[in-house]
Amino acid sequence: VLDSFDVKDDWETGEMRLEGNALKIEGDQITKKRVSIESQMKQRLEALHSNIELVEEEIDERRNEKRKELDASLSKLQTLSQRKKESRTLELNKKIDDLQGRCSNDESADAKAGYENEMAALHSLAQAEMEAENEQLQFEVNELTSQFTDYSKILDRELHSNLQRHERGCQTLREKTRKDFVYRESEWQKNVIFWLDKATRKLQARERDGMKNPVPNAKRARLEQRKIAKRNDQAGIG
Image (cartoon, rainbow, N blue to C red; front, side, top):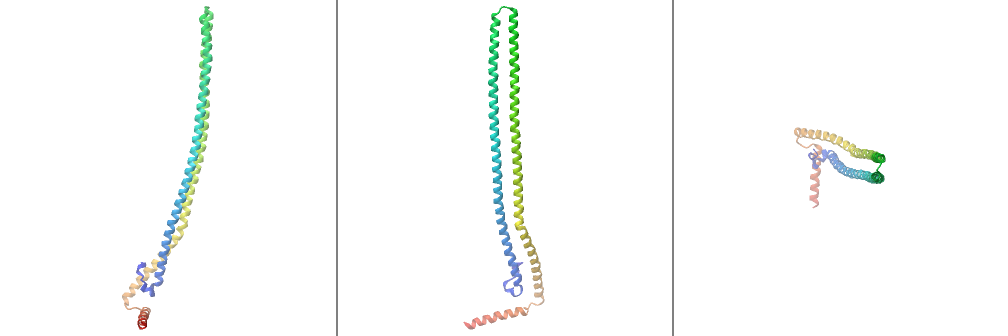
């Protein structure tokens, strides 16, 4: 529509053409502004994403460090428990071997029966103590594992909270960025619609006038006369 208004017709439609050009320039500026704002938003979003990635890495490092501590503690518990059982087993076996030797050397049936009872009791004692030690080990393993699980849940909540803040921050940035140009763009669109309506009516009116009276009106005629006079003056000066 803007191209329909020629400079040579500025005597009649100059104001309309200037308004249209001004709106076009403003539209170009708004487009450039939007590109600039969106570029800035992208950079800030990338910075936010980088920050949350650092938070995730830091939490993962803390979790891995705690897991290493757990593994070391479990290994230490199992080693100590195994040593304790081995030491106790050697002690009881030594007693059993001693009783076995005394039983072999003693010819009394009653004495042999007594030795055998004592050896059986030691075997039962050894089995009961090993089972008790295994239960104690499992209890301590469960305690350490539970502590790690609780700590891991704390880290999960911390990560979840940071992720929520991150999402809110990104959303706030997007909304603020949008508000920075939406109002101006909306107002510009309203002005463009208003100008298009005026321009269309103006062009339609010119077309009707042209069909009714193809001869230039008085104002246009005076303008043409001034142009002719100006050319004549310039020719006379030459």
